[in-house]
Image (cartoon, rainbow, N blue to C red):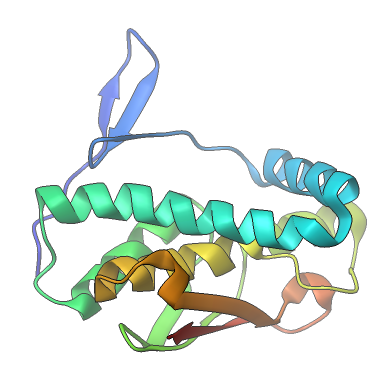
Amino acid sequence: MSKEIAPSFDMDRGIVDLGGRRIVAHCNHYNVFLQRTIEDGLKERAPRLLIAAGVEAARNMLGGLEQRAPSASATDCIERAARIFAEHGFGALDISRLSERGGTATMLRSHYAMGWRSRWGVRTTPACYFPTGYLAGAVAIASKLAPERVTAVETECHAAGAAHCSFLVEVW
């Protein structure tokens, strides 16, 4: 297993760094309001943009971590990604059926799904675009593939009334 890199904090400048990349954290209220603003403005184009943002966030952060402290295996890399995702408050991912070749992941309590339901109730479409993209980005880093070689889709969403959120990740 790889050695872990802890975030570093520059209190004078208000900067948090993880793996050489600056990070910022927002609460579920901020994130779902931002998502709703993007969805309202971009309509049917919004999911693609929001998923792409998740891919890039994962690739930037995990890519920096993998350069500084490489994981021992693709499985370790995906496990690291899931740990970081949970530690930042986005939810605990069950990645037991996910590998560098793709697969499925589930999440009982998604930051986005819970935030959406607490503010606006059940919606008609899945809401977890960022986690969808994050999983695709994590698998791309773990498999050392270009991001366009990995796609992900949320197949069930708690925000849309499902018991949990499920994701399908495919490698092309």
